[in-house]
Length: 96
Image 1 (cartoon, helix red, strand yellow):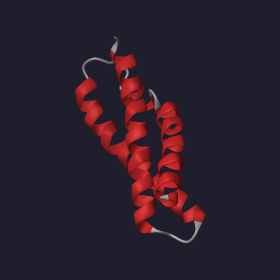
Image 2 (image 1 turned 180 degrees about the horizontal axis):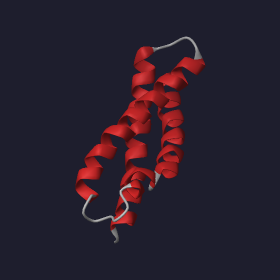
Image 3 (image 1 turned 60 degrees about the horizontal axis):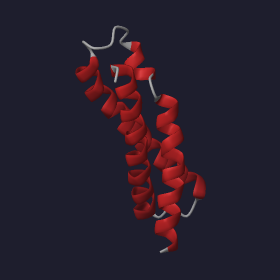
Image 4 (image 1 turned 45 degrees about the vertical axis):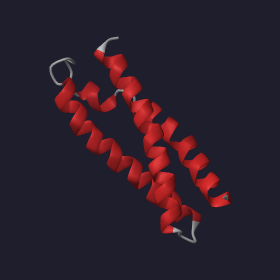
């Protein structure tokens, strides 16, 4: 696998992990407003993305020529995998 493909799949898995973490934290905060719950979950997802960006940047800085590709590769799939897992885990925890 090329480094770009590895980075892409790492972002997908990190999106799933961020969705689970966001769902758990949103449940623990127990906000009465649904929009606030979403904003809190989204903020957690952004923080996880930015922290892992710096970790992945140090790992892939010699393997990928354009450094901007490290930031942009898989960003859409990160959030497209985060959103369904956030909704799934938050709803599951809320129902149980």
